[in-house]
Length: 113
Image (tube, rainbow, N blue to C red):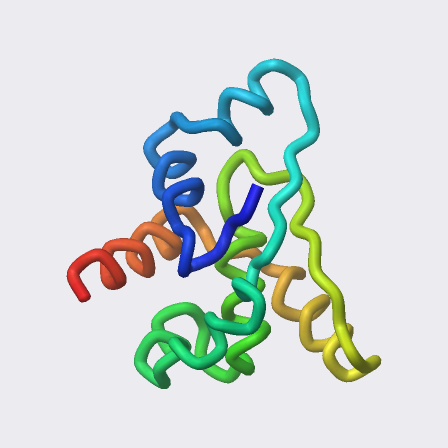
């Protein structure tokens, strides 16, 4: 299932305790999220303010990946990288997921525009 800040319904639903990811996990399935950067579209939408809200110091790609990877009820986030530096950036970002409260602040901020 696509999970990103562009298609954030799965994140919001999971934060509220429902939606397909929660239902799948409750049924004993492993959940996978794809397109965490929404085909690169998210990179252009990442403002400095949004990146600071997510986690200061991350690249736009790492910040986007971190938000998807922090989604409750998501077991695996699928991504690809073009270099070892990008891999290290992604691994560093995912090593400390956002808390539910941090993730909710991000989705709330996006909802208010």
